[in-house]
Image (cartoon, rainbow, N blue to C red):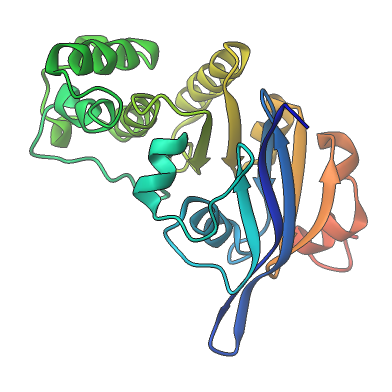
Length: 241
């Protein structure tokens, strides 16, 4: 279909005898917001890395905007329209906040002035405009999470993939990131979000996909998925299911 953006087709990743991701399929159209959830070690970040090219697939395909990108490098995928953050913030601590955002902007604009404008706009968008000149190593954890988002936005992505951007934040900071994600989605951006906090998943609404032991076990709206006995068992154990 014309609005199909991302198509993950039966993707599997094996590390020797360990199957970390097992035949996972995911379809996302332009404007979708999908929360990817599951217990620790379920394979969520591995799936992200297969989609964005940090890992190569053992089986299956990844299609993006109608193109087979299964063999493309992370850099090529970034140029095509993937933007992502990482579970552990990868800010360049000796550089300023603006210079960090410029790293993303230079992928889109080779002109320094245009790249700087793009980077600054993205910092403003995530609430870091006033911190542009501050060395990134001096930012709080919440600000570093926002900077990761700004740097990914500076790429001008068609899809933004957020890997636990709320981990370690206090409730007020979590609420702020929820509002930011909602605003980005309302602006037309497609988002795929790994999240552990089920209250956050409910707050974001939209579609939820659950993986456990590398396998997709449920998908649908938050209330239906989070009341599924298989999901409850995955998180809490059999007696609660």
